Length: 586
Ligand code: GTP
Ligand code: MG
Image (cartoon, rainbow, N blue to C red; front, side):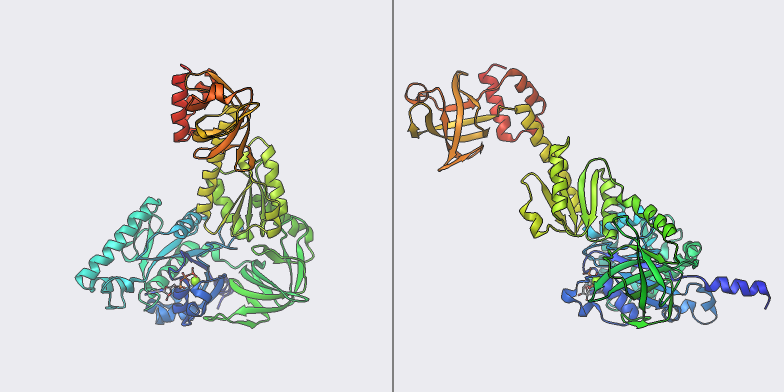
């Protein structure tokens, strides 16, 4: 063999496994699909059948060949990739921790969709993130065995579908076309994989059953094809070990890190540098033990070295707090260089706007995903952080109350919730919105901010005045004069102390001094409430006894401004404003 040949062979060996993320809505069958491919039963052993954290499946080349007859025998030279590293993600937090410079960590992805349920919130979220990160993906239309009347007929999916009973075929097609239409409304054109020729224009749909195993061969073939066609340039194994910390578990004197190595070769006893969110110095630690995920298993085994892409568990000597989602690199006494590299990478995520809301997430990966989607929705972000919502976040949000945009006094928690301690210090006008689906959080945020903005505009327009109509409750007169105190029912709008009241003819009646509900003094009373008001400079017997309704007085300028901004008023307020315009002849 010539030298050239030798080099070529070496080059060939230096291809890393493509990382394939398996994502999708809760319960659509991600873990079951990986189980079927591995020949294990993880899904049924999970608490509540729900995946709690990210896990790996290493599929070696031999297993792919075993699964895909087309690659068997002589043809096995066709398969140039050394296998796949699949990553199972929990459906309740689509993308936790999965990040890498320039976008998602995945080289490829499988979006698992229950064909009987179609696109769900998490499916939409994942599609959006795949698009933003430009992750090539295929869609596994899972649970075809649940389509009414389905029987496995053939190993070839096309023939399998064609040989189903007529009504089953129709039921399948109906579901398929409905799904394709809703994908199209998300801006994606799709086609059944065996009819698809241009994979750059349409998304491939692969009908499968993670229960019976039907279609999985097709799915693997697609992944191999796509990897070899579109990824080869990206799959060259580099010299520098690089990875991401996924989980961290502290024990007495050391900590265990579950990590993905996505480039290079790492050795037990190597030193690694882990990025630090506070942009301080990276955390340097020696690896005490290195364990690698075993092929087709969810168990780890100690190894001397491991090559990307793979799943690793490392025992770290350093105890300093490591944040999940952080990148790591091999450390070779090059602290300055590494610090620069990390800072460059993290600055993009940490750089925020001059004003805006506070954003918290459970890990770096989910923070990045939330940032991406919030920026797409034009939401400004003042401060970001990882972990639960703490006192410091409440203080930052409270400071926004004093700023130009008090509607930014919001803390958004993506899988991040309010500390009990912080709860005690939470001011009324600071809003905390926490949850697991970014889209819902964004919707809730935008709705709250709109409400807050119109409330504030209303407050400004009304200043010391108000829109209000009350009915006098003549049965409840508590005092005749100095001041007169009597009961009223608010028919529309709201009243506050200091408001000037007029009667139905527009005659001045007096100013509200105070409002009482039962025995309590209150600052404001809204539509529907029955309360007592005190009115100064007035005598009930002489002036009020014969009246039925009272209104809050209003000047012509205020009326015009309110009329121009009618959309901020409630229906009750609109009605009252109309009546006032008649009384005052505006
Ligand atoms: P999370 O991890 O909670 O997001 O769910 P998952 O997407 O990993 O779903 P999982 O694999 O745990 O499956 C959810 C349920 O659907 C389980 O009861 C599975 O047995 C069932 N299931 C998964 N795939 C199939 C399938 O192809 N056919 C049928 N009939 N049931 C399936
Ligand atoms: Mg799962």
